[in-house]
Amino acid sequence: MMSETQVLPGATEGAMPLIFERGDARTVVATGLPTLDVPEAPLPEGLVAEAPPALPGVGPLDLVRHYTHLATRNFSVAGNFYPLGSCTMKFNPPLNEAAAADPRFTNLHPLQDDRDVQGALELLHELRQWLAEIAGLDEVSLQPCAGAHGEFTALKVIRAYFNDPEGGNQPQRRIVLAPDTAHGTNPASCTMCGANVVTVPSRDGLLDLEALREMVSDETAALMITNPNTSGLFDGQIGKISEILHDAGALCYLDGANMNAIVGVSRPGDFGVDVMHFNTHKTFSTPHGCGGPGAGPIAVRDFLAPYLPVPQVRCRDDGEGAAYYLDDDRPRSIGRVRGHFGQFGVLLRCWAYIAACGSGGLREVARHAVLNANYVAARLRDRYETPYFDPEANRYCAHEFITVPRKLLDSGVTLIDLAKRLIDHGIHPPTMHWPVHDCLMIEPTETESRATLDRFVDAMLAIADECEADAERVRTAPHRAPVSRLDEVAAARNPVLVYEGG
Image (cartoon, rainbow, N blue to C red; front, side, top):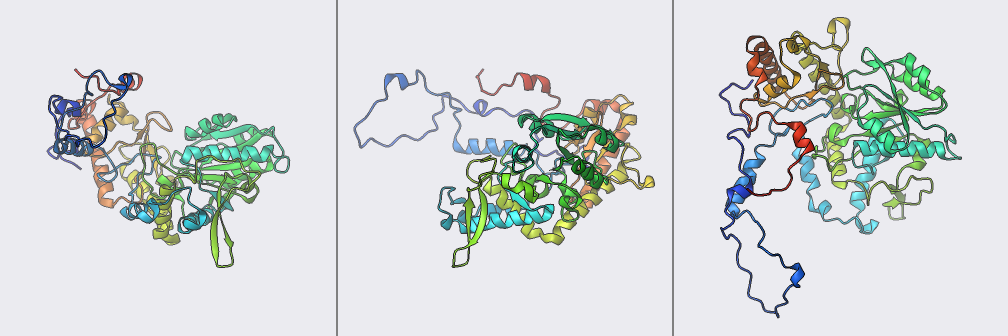
């Protein structure tokens, strides 16, 4: 736990001046232009600005110092613990970054002839095979750029299958079921795809099987389920869930956002899943890129494979050995969902991670992710209620868990107060108010040491003590962050994105 005298990373000063406020517009910092050795060609009058541009007026050293100092205020998993539930903020190995930065990859162009990029195509072909094996499914598309894009692509594939007279031939199936614990992207992707979303209730943190039986019909296309779910529970009913769907002619879709808990241990295809997507930035350590780039490959059973996006990487024997090529000749495909071939740099990192781990290493990823989450939950449960974690009842969490700290909230503090106080300990707050109100969702990931987990627990317990002894200190936190409490609603509704001077 950080003491009150320790310095929070990036919190050495108050609000930083803007780059425009650091410099002096009267300062000339640019070098002169070379003497013309060609006839001068003045710009047309309409293209000439009426006044010089309002540049900051700082030299190169001040510029570097400004942005270097700004960078220290970014919070990242490279700097400290980041237990953001349902985000899997695990370590991003530098080895993956080195592979992605190799000029033999970065200098490739997507319009080069297939014969010139055999190594890259072989890598993608191998990654497809690995992901299919991990999923326990038959075919994979690497095209989607993120988890939500993978959802959308998979739903388009499902729709194409049911609309195809030579496929499912049941175009009336336009309803997609989603549990009340579903990620918000699930219903959003359905809406984008023209499907009607119907919510299936949960019972004690798991899908209500009786409700599912009553809701599934000949208009149901699929159920989108996350397993383990967002309550941090592995739903052992998944085989029965798949059976109910298949008996009704519907498909089982797995949102693979929480694959980190089961990768290498349990294969979705083995418990009845027909189609799923991966989040490479979660399970396979590709960086969380503040909205991009990402990759959300989808895996499907054989009967859905003809509808996957183009192109697909294929391999054939050209008489001189294996030759890899991009296959666009897929008449039943849903078409392109991305220019060129997806996010190659992200997929390369994914390949490097799987290659480094191997099958045994991936199993250890899942086991340690689950172990770490259960360790933290066990240490916190006496002070932070854990509604779905109860070792006495033989009920454990998967890779994450939720706590609803009602006793602490009864002391007059709010969930945001607890989160803000955690910032003073140099730790990023967990996810709040989701999937249930007044909860914290905590996901330690497998890459954190026991010492880090203990530091986090000690900080949480210290905050619990403060709620009872000095609640005002919690209510006024953070005390050592560069910026304290922001009006987040006003910032979202009235963003100031352009410097206007003054």
